[in-house]
Image: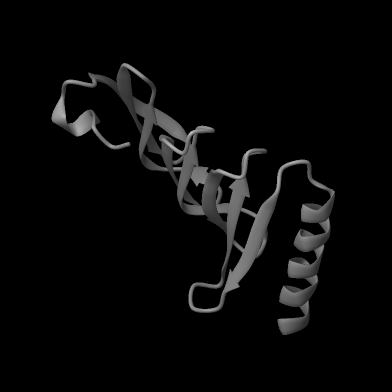
Length: 119
């Protein structure tokens, strides 16, 4: 099993070196997930999240704009969209609820609503 993990990790590192966007990978031995951080060209963090060892998105993923402001908060379970997702822009917060990759509801909030302040 350890050889498979090392092979997968090596493969991911190889892919990273060929990618246009800079990213850093780290295997979390406690969770058995590969933690990744992507960066914008200006060096600001673009995304953070985790992959399962077989390459599926897992847990919370956060996206940021080029100024470092949070733009998306997403949740995955074994590669499927689940739970509450939040999309921020200059004037609104959009809340999208997912169950097993399917949208169940969408709510729009304006920036004057206290729950919309998350940046």
